[in-house]
Image 1 (cartoon, rainbow, N blue to C red):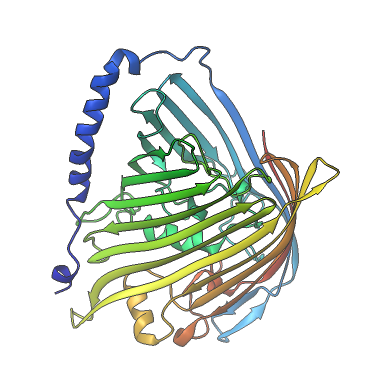
Image 2: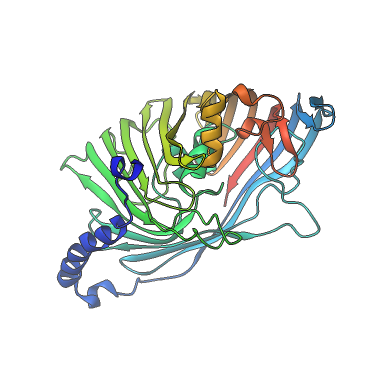
Length: 440
């Protein structure tokens, strides 16, 4: 029944490749391999480093006591940590081909009993991993209309997920990112190996720009110790279209985004996105639909985003066929105040919320397809002092949270407010943070 109501997308990946081949073949014929392989003059590796150094004071963190069945308060604490660190390089060996490789070592020094989100990375030698590794191929010289991006990177869905943490206004990224990434690829980094076709379509005055992306990715490796999708396979298909009106958000295609243009942009970007995956060992089908908006007008920076996710499956020996849905999103606003004709000081406020099933039956459905339920709400109020545009800033923010486990009750780990890696069931605390974000 459920397969007939929601058709499987097992073969969409093949259709995607067949659709792409005529375009790429035609463009290669126009360019010729000689033009495509034209060496870039002065080619060299461009190294870079990015750091987020935080000092966080947490309050009201609670851990569930499995013996007494109540939450015990842990000590308020001061925690110094490297929240995020990136080391990498970019290269452009040919006129139409670029490459990016980034290594990460995050959450070094993080105390998992503090109120901030995420796992720790402590020990004698903290772990380092690949964060991004992809190639960008421009199919026609001096044109922004079509690019192929391939490798290990973020599926192009959801502004919060595809925007670097250094470029968002809140101290921590909105929960919109966390729930979307878990739904799409099952891991917090949000990365997967895949291929994406995208580009920019602009009118002559460049005051109307359409940024499009269509991608096919490996789905979550949920089986065989994280090395397989299981016995049943369907690719993850993603699509995103962004219409920019007024001052363009970007004039050159790429998969790096900014939210603050430091009073230089008067424009709005409105996006629609969609994802789909067919039958797997975990569900019959999975999908998401969302929209986001970015408004920059003088000193005002406003962004908002909302998504609905769905997973369709069956349980109780097929006696219950269901489509489990959840919604999440955020709104965030800041304003650039010019200090001393040189620096930008940006007060900001953010509200983010996740909402899933509150009832026992709905929460059982969520558990069956590894989705979250209950509710989670986050507030962030703070100020950013931009010492150098997009490269160096100081942050002072206060973040507080609320959550409701619904019918699951105490000790349930139904969403990110109620669970912490290496701890278990919690009620997440609030925190005051002082941070430095730097890009070199």
